[in-house]
Amino acid sequence: MSDLPASVRISEEGPREGFQFEKGFIPTARKIELIDALAKTGLDHIQIVSFVNPKLVPGMADADDVVAGMTPQPGVACAALWLNEKGFERALQHDNRLALVGSIQLCTSEKFLKRNQNRTMEQQLAAQHTIVEMYKKNGVPVERGSLMAAFGCNFEGDIPVARVVSLVGQMLDVASAHGVTLKYVSLADTMAWATPLSIKRVVGALRDRWPDLDIALHLHDTRGMAIANAYAGLEMGVRRFDASVAGLGGCPFAGHKGAAGNVCTEDLVFMCHEMGIETGIDLDALIECARLAEDVVGHSLPGAVMKGGTLDQYRA
Amino acid sequence: MSDLPASVRISEEGPREGFQFEKGFIPTARKIELIDALAKTGLDHIQIVSFVNPKLVPGMADADDVVAGMTPQPGVACAALWLNEKGFERALQHDNRLALVGSIQLCTSEKFLKRNQNRTMEQQLAAQHTIVEMYKKNGVPVERGSLMAAFGCNFEGDIPVARVVSLVGQMLDVASAHGVTLKYVSLADTMAWATPLSIKRVVGALRDRWPDLDIALHLHDTRGMAIANAYAGLEMGVRRFDASVAGLGGCPFAGHKGAAGNVCTEDLVFMCHEMGIETGIDLDALIECARLAEDVVGHSLPGAVMKGGTLDQYRA
Image (cartoon, rainbow over all chains, first blue to last red; front, side, top):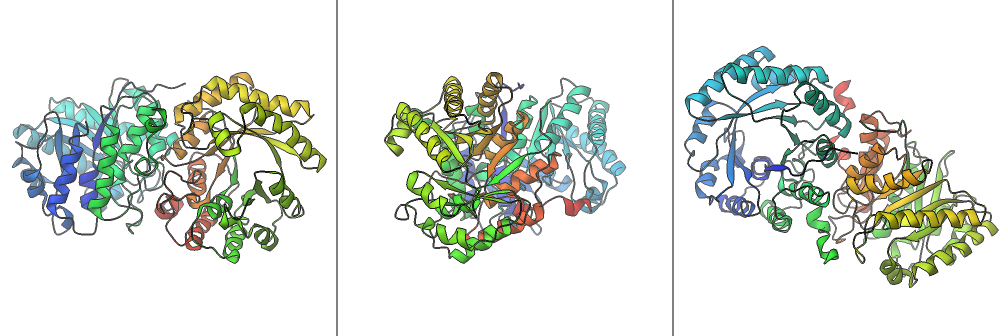
């Protein structure tokens, strides 16, 4: 009936997604409070900040202070996002507190690349060689391939599955050319085009080509499909998911038109646990974090299980 | 990979679910406005009211006026819910405007039955014989078997699949004893216990026993699983779904603790259309109805596609 995995690894992206998107001012101490609470739930990977231009992303102006102020927990990797060399250099300053991981990043859509980074597909590919060398020079492991807009693009429309397969091949070639082995390839549904069927088609095509390739899914919920897409991924044996506590990140109730956060972490954990899939996460503690997230951002967030409750109370 | 159907039939339950649960006063004319708009979207079945005790459900006190005031559309069946003979008699007064359909109703949970109707499982089964005769006497077709709490119960916990199979068998026996043939059996996830895996297990067990039985799913979204559960149903070939425009019905943002509406109609229609499954519904018109629903109830509702938008604009 399905190929559900026995366990999954969930990377929490709520702090980075949320603090980046929220329009209201959030005190640094409150951001740290949420991160510290998340680090005690059993989550072993939390993306806590992005090192980006504070003029463009005011919510990340205090990224250095957030990293310096949070309390590291044994076994919990705190990660950061950066978009260019300057951001990477800022992240490097915190390499005693952050788990820095390099990635090879490609995008399915030339129109999107042009718009965001003023690069052609070829220029983006060429840049990855330089970036991998930069990571190697700085002793940062290159573990991830990351494909933006893997399921569709607002600027280019539907994306042929064959293009996704070709681009993943290019990533693996870049890694190979520099003597590194990617631990996994992350498919990002950046603009929320995926359906469960397209998840199955794309993941299936990659599985056919590289049966042992570990695939991760980064699923935005802008059209309400994220949890169904995650389920489709689970049925294809996907064992890595990004997720966002309470559904933080571009809250649809706060006027961030067209943008919603990642699949809600506690809803995903609930689904996994109810289907017998281990996550290593304490769901009750995570739900408390989701409620804290609502308090920190000052408005309701989309997560459902934190409102509807778990089922264990009825089984006891 | 899956057994997705070519087309599905969606029964809209938003007006009944919504007007029943909303706590604020909604003028009758505004209820009619929403129903009339829904009737022009291509939906061919809309449950518009319930005939229940107005002291217990004040939002349905104007049910007779709603039925009398709405504008019937050719090819659109407007339905009503009732819970006892008195409600049925009120519905009968409107049989020129309403499409009255009788159902055989059982429940997986004796504790739930005891609590709600003060009946044992045996008493509930016996009552169905009387009810079917009542429908026959009044010329109302008995088309549906309806099983409450098919996936779990807040009062009884997990429900064994074998019990569901047994109860569906009892429904079919009741129908057969009175010479009627059920068109389909509806499995209600009344208290939102289902996961995609339990949907597959239960539907699969029924398919094994009765390969040609048409199954419908009534999926509440209290724990955020409804769209994933609907997808699991589609993969099992389920072609009938109840749904609720904008996710109306026990809005989690309005303090209705533990209760959310059915799977959001326009999100379900979006998923179906994107996966090549026909619904006969004009999605853009339905999204306009979802926005109207928010205006009518006076607060935000959970539907995602009405906020995130469809994909057609990007393909044009």
